[in-house]
Image (cartoon, rainbow, N blue to C red; front, side, top):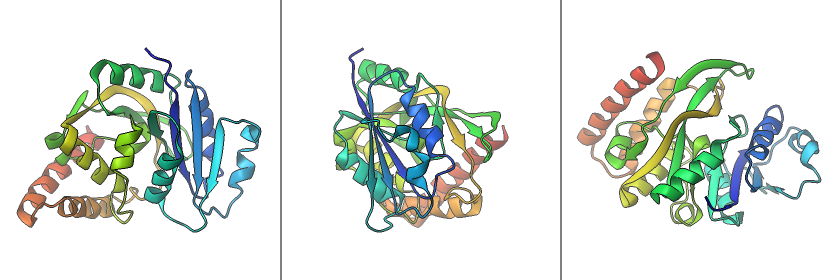
Amino acid sequence: MTGEKVSVIIPAYNSSRTIYSAVDSVMKQGIPVEVIIVDDCSTDDLIGALDGYAEDDRVNIIRNEKNMGVAASRNRGVAAATCRYVAFIDSDDQWQPDKLVKQLKLMEQTGAVLCSTARELVNEDGSRTGKVIGVPEKVTYKMLLRGNVINCSSVVMDRQVALRYPMGNDDIHEDYICWLQILKEYGSSVAINEPLLLYRQMRNSKSGSKLSSAKKTFAVYRKVGYGVTRSCFYFMCYAVNGVVKYLF
């Protein structure tokens, strides 16, 4: 495997309680990284929470002049990145130490432009649940329409593709629209069905409300150009997959 370096994008807003753990997990990946933290006008002591990395030249903190939202913050991080690959992690999540190594190896083997992983759910206090949400090892565009199996904090992708398909629509599922656009062009992405992401469940997160998430998912189908009938069909697939994912 080539000695690729990865630009890791971390959008952050009032996440001083969790940001250090997220950054620390990135630093333990065993490959060179540049960490780009995009501070979206936090009002807490986010910078103070990162004192342990204050002198580390691998960490670059960018502060938005006004609150831009998570999608625009990720886009700004991608624009500032210098590596061939970019990876995303939210400021309250963590990675297993071998995550990036395994993903880069798979991407080099397959030529894929996007790779995700399974995840283990973590409680808000950081305690592990043991509950794993799996992912198919190949994700096609048609599969993705039936439910978003690509978690943003698990994604590694080609930076040039990320630049061509920036995230938008912060009011709905900005990452889901992005993945659909990419897979519509490239056909499929790859994934590692191992819980290499520790995904924290936050009560006040965008995806915390299942009803709100469902409404946003339907809006995604409409946004990407499907009519009401087709959107309803894919929404029913999403609903069924959601029940299977979280209950079984």
